Image (tube, rainbow, N blue to C red; front, side, top):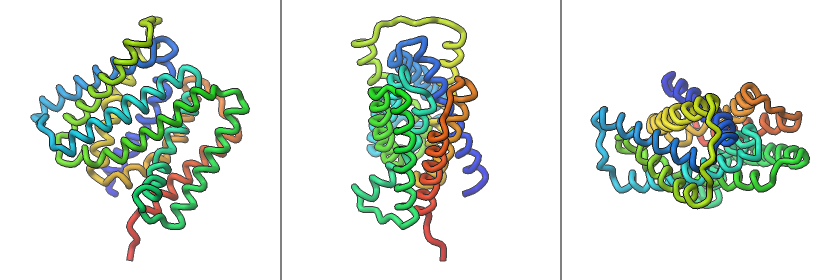
Length: 290
């Protein structure tokens, strides 16, 4: 893994982790799905415009179109949609921790569904991840965390896992920014439907909301997605997913710094165990050296 890939990985982890804090701010002032659909629309149009300016083609391969649709549905509409709704009642740090377990679920799906052989280190990482999640869940539930919101986060991370398994087919073949823009537009269309049907358009306009919305639209919404596709195309899904071990730490630190969220000792221990489990799983997937 070269320096450029390392820089891209750390940049992606920081941008990805910060999205939970900005989302938590947004949903305090605006309806979640409406705000998310508008974010996708703006990010998607910007992405498509940049792709057009770069001379990229929108004539994608069949595999790319399938990847765009699956990614737009599973990551954008389901994962982010459920997270935005959930963060009306749960902390941003908890959302970041739950979402960061995605690499563990990817490894588990490979083992159980696709019959991928998992080394002992990988099994130990999966078990560590389960222990870390149980610790955090127990601490959060005893502290009065909304069970409905927590359930939405769990369903969301399963959807993110499916999106991650599908992303390789979408990123191969070039036209990366065009793919990013199109999958964001798919997410915008899919989240607009429940937003129009179920959400009243009541917005508390203020500078904090506007700043958070602009940030989440341009940085996690567009830049992070583009960096992720480029990173996967450069080093592959398995190695790219290694950087997710940073997300529990970064998600908690950013939420604590900007929102003042308090994290208990069991939460901290759980974060450390989950991060170690993610790292162990990803290391176990690396090719054995002679």
